Image (cartoon, rainbow, N blue to C red; front, side):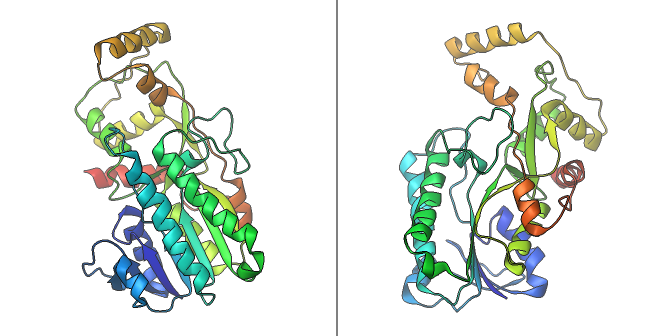
Length: 315
């Protein structure tokens, strides 16, 4: 296949190129255009307007503004990138009926900022903040186009992926930050909170993308996640195994930590009530739908195996 990948030079894009390039012809669309092994050529967004981009069989839309954990990004930036660029590239897909597959990378945060029980695809979306809100706006545009003109999508596949936290070699996100904290020997004081979270190995992402591109998979929204959810305590233990260190997990009373967090809010310290909630909440998503669609019982990479590969890359 000839595949166009937007955001091709990013973390997920680079991994997809490595995975897909041996059997496919890959083109990039990005704000930068250095030569990249496995990519025939990278085009600019202006090239899309001028018709310079070659005909392709599929588009994978990765380009976006990632969640800013420091909350320093102006809300408009999220919408200009996450919503407006999605509209631009999806309109291009709609105008070129020869392109048979479109994969949009949204986020689990477009569906829910917090999860009670298990997150599934049929949840009524309730994003909080401009990151999730801009992604759901992009999703809604795609879904409205498909609903308003279903004949235009006959014989074509449109897939909205909602991954939970993605990890893999080259990852620079929150997992890397936690790794550096643990590496310094700083004890984890929230061991009393046995929260569980779904992570997503980038290898499982690549497997799912290849699956929808090569199989007859129904269009729709699909959660992306590893089969196993891990607690933060288990994650820290895995980090320590990778470092060859003993895990220092303090199980301080929850009541004490809630008090410390409230005090932190008053004194503007790093740990306040909102950050405590984020660090200790459950966020478990079901990947049953994508596995049914691909005809598999398990994703190819176990969560702990994928994390081990990620953590080894941090060294």
